[in-house]
Structure formats: structure tokens, C-alpha cells
Amino acid sequence: MIQAKAYAAQTPETDLAPWDFERREVGPHDVQIEIQYCGVCHSDLHQIKNDWFPGIFPMVPGHEIVGKIIKVGDHVKKFKVNELAGVGCMVDSCQVCETVKTAWSNTAWKAIPKLTTTKIAAACLPMVVIPTLL
Image (cartoon, rainbow, N blue to C red):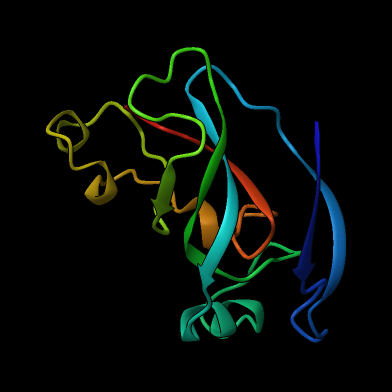
């Protein structure tokens, strides 16, 4: 596992505070990105306060990141170490529906929004590991 640090809300009632956790290792189709910039918008603020629906805590707010690729999986062909990369809030999908097969995975019915709604998957932290899907 990869050691990571972030600012997280432990509950909807707590302020953001430093938090240590582990990221999974880079898999064959993944890239590891050293995050340089991250967007935090009103949706992140609503998310950490449970304004829309119950969240999964601890929660690290932030999405839409830009950073430098620091590691690539063995099967990654379109991305190289030291290249810049940008990631929106939808970073994975079902990989099986017709929408995905036509290269529009961010609009797939079964898209998986990993960066803002799942435990420790948000982006305002030094590093993230995500699947390339390419």
C-alpha cells in the first residue's frame, strides 16, 4: 500500500483536519499522479455536510485534478512518467455498456464517480492512483 496524507472531514459535523491513510498500489492499467492543482467547489462543500445525501466518511473534498504522472502500470501505453494529466470527477465506469464501447465512458449509465463520493477517493491530496481505461 502507498502511504498518503489529506485533509478530511471525519463526520459532517467536523472541520477538515489532517488525515493519514493508504492508497492501493498501482495496477497494470493504472497511473499514479502527483497532484499539483485541485478544484474544490460548492458540490464538495455540500457533500461533506451531507446536504444532498448521506456521505461516506472520512471524506476528502475535491475533484478535477491536474498533476504529474509519477508511475504507470505495465499495460499503460498512452501515458508516460513526467507527463501532465488531468482527471475529472468521473474516473471509472462499468466497462461493458454500449456508451462505454463508443468511448464516452464518463456518460455511461453505470459510471462510477470515485473522486467525490467514495471513501478516501477524493482528490485534494498529494497523490492519487486511478485506472486509465485506455
